[in-house]
Length: 278
Ligand code: BEZ
Ligand code: FE
View 1 (cartoon, rainbow, N blue to C red):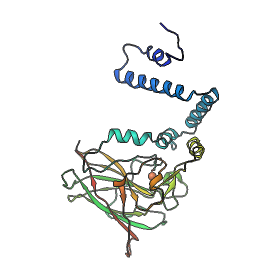
View 2: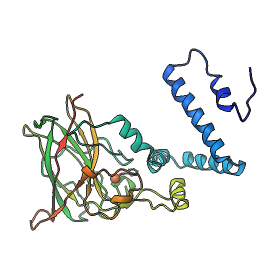
View 3: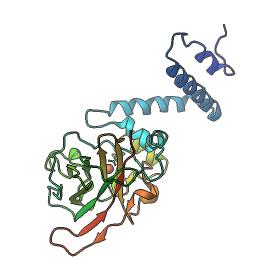
View 4: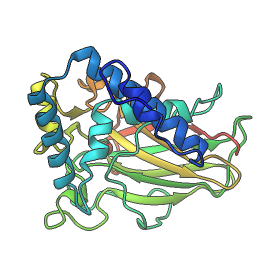
């Protein structure tokens, strides 16, 4: 038996874990305590800093609601969400890379015929998005569900402005046919700041970081026999590509948007998605 001291603090805490503890929980918590204690020793945390940290985490919890998840935002802004994504989706050669899911997906968006425009508020420049959903051998995947969502031309998702935007604005689900193709119209998205009126925004400001994300269209693609793909395509040339507040950008996800003369759209972009098997 030993009492906790500066020298033995992590071992003492970890030594209390019960024998019957789930092995994975033991592994995760032991490492967490080791690293946390090491960090506190490294920076020699002051009591005022400890109090500030507790206050920050308390406010982070207090601002959470059914429509606001500040802890996920914190994870995003610290690069943790993208690190977990990277570890869990080590993409094989040829498969489309994943990126952060974000807090603005809504389950149950309308299933729409190919080519439909998902923008319902009349704002923004319309873009035709088209491409194929393929397997690793380049074969088209039929019956893939392509669930897409973006902000509107003012930089807000419909759920952020329920009284201003039509329900399901800039959202839709499309089902691929036998040739694996998808096509829909939406706006050419604009860059927008992540919610920065809470503790995460204060943290970013204190660190001299901006809250902006480069313009992107979200995709969640599911297909029988394949791993679900959660990703974006980013608008090439966006000025925030190199400084995304949540570190979601990958070079392979940046798409060209071509200006066109067409009665139905001002822009076109083509992007194929390659899913890996389960
Ligand atoms: C988004 O792209 O919708 C998003 C991702 C992470 C944090 C906030 C927003
Ligand atoms: Fe987004």
